[in-house]
Image 1 (cartoon, helix red, strand yellow):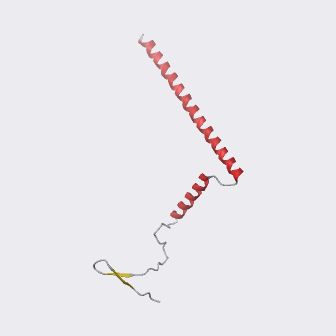
Image 2 (spheres, one colour):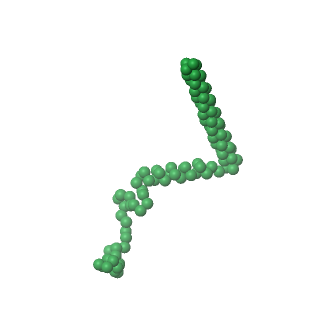
Image 3 (cartoon, one colour):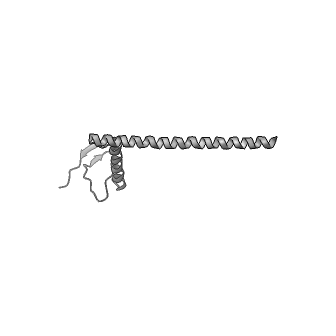
Length: 105
């Protein structure tokens, strides 16, 4: 009796695994098909309107920013070799600024 119950439970587990595998496959295929329909629709709309789709514009801006920052130009930082001309001020002991220093010309 135990042998029959074990065989039956193995058969049910195999059937359940097969059903779940089929469900996952259907989900993945339907997701890919939906993504393909959206990409085709956005491409067709961009061809009809003559404008780039918003995600393309956004990702191209992000790519430009990442390329700019990989070259070492960070906001507030001066690239090497450049000289920044600033007005220097003398600060007294209490943290008050005095007259600005005269520029050398």
